[in-house]
Image 1 (spheres, rainbow, N blue to C red):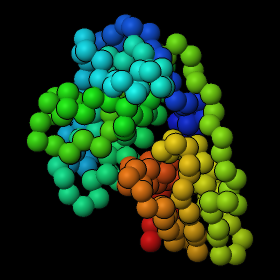
Image 2 (image 1 turned 120 degrees about the horizontal axis):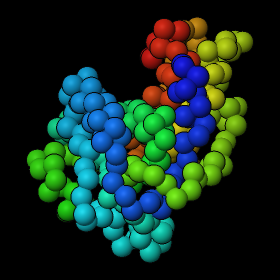
Image 3 (image 1 turned 180 degrees about the vertical axis):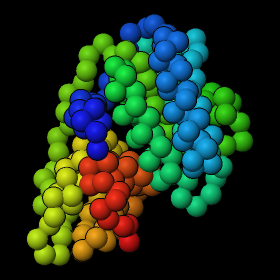
Image 4 (image 1 turned 60 degrees about the vertical axis):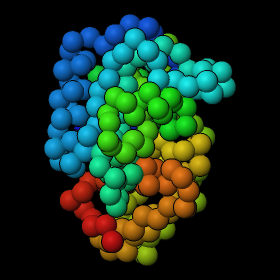
Length: 222
């Protein structure tokens, strides 16, 4: 993991209020290029949208105070087995890409106008959108569980495993519940997630963070 990526993982926090200004041409170029790479790599249909109409629904505006959301990623793909996890993994990558380029993000699952957004990427399964832009603040860290609460290793845990768990605990998960368990034995690692409506997406996000922290060359998923 590069130092820049590690810094992005620590700096990234949920931001719900954004400056009402469009992304720069440079920002759009960087983000669009990354979207294209992820779509090709995982056969997805993620779209970077900029519109005059905000996708934030009533709850997102009134309960969570969402404001200024006019640029966002639509996490979409063909409905198939594992699509939620793949989109979660790719979405995590996009969040960190945005953070490394001075932008802020907000994962939105139940707080966007689904009917409106589905019209932007017709015929695809949409699991979430991610607001992206210049936040009015940088957000604050979420309350986190300890490594012992979410992981175990058979024998003495190597540094790469501990680094992976540390990175996984920085991952954004639904309601910040961190309902995952990571187990290691030799170079084999398993990741399980408590069943729920967002578990597939969250599993992909946590898997992405763990791989960045541990280094994919050091282990295999089992």
